[in-house]
Image 1 (cartoon, rainbow, N blue to C red):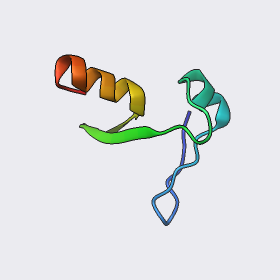
Image 2 (cartoon, one colour):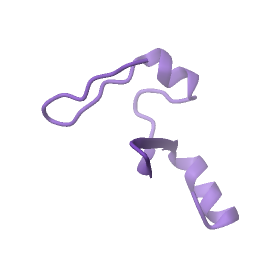
Image 3 (cartoon, one colour):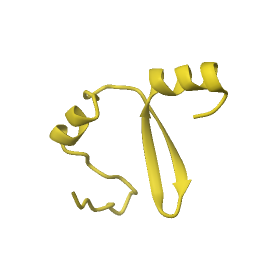
Image 4 (spheres, rainbow, N blue to C red):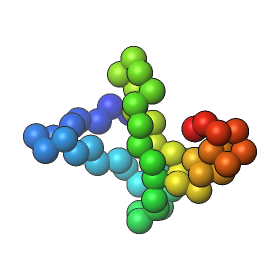
Length: 57
């Protein structure tokens, strides 16, 4: 799915895409760059669990 970044740096993610990722409006996510032009959104609870278990995202 192709999305556009607006003049204020925002991207609107369709609800269907969020649902496929197990996210709902109001979900807390962590965002970070994974290099090569990739941005990653992770459910907050999943990222915290990875940090506790493996020490990395």
